Image (spheres, helix red, strand yellow):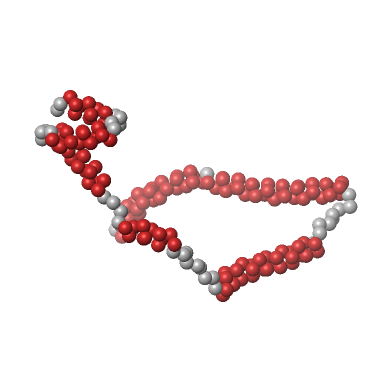
Length: 183
């Protein structure tokens, strides 16, 4: 590769070459020997030239303009579909409002009233009720204590298991008693 071609290639890869210098570089590459580096440059410049030759057809502009000028489709909404969609929502709202109204009327009838005339009497009744609840709770916990003591019976029941083994061991002796009675 000669020095002029090297200078032009350096300028070309640095994007500093002019159009005239690029044309000169392409001519030098086309005339150069068929080394591996030159083949790569020839293929690259050939690709660029073939891509430059491509152009859009005359009908491209017409097709694009036709697409732009097309009017969008209008959507038709039927009243029956509209009515069906929103009638359910309106019915649900009507039921909700009506039930809310009747609920509020019913709540006005049951206003909370004080059942005791004095706070001291109310406190006394509260203490009485709490003592009663406490008694019920204590009764329940004593029942639980009884159940807890029943769980301790499992330990005692293990001893009975050995008694069953002893009874099975005594069966041969009882057979001997039967034999003695016969003889």
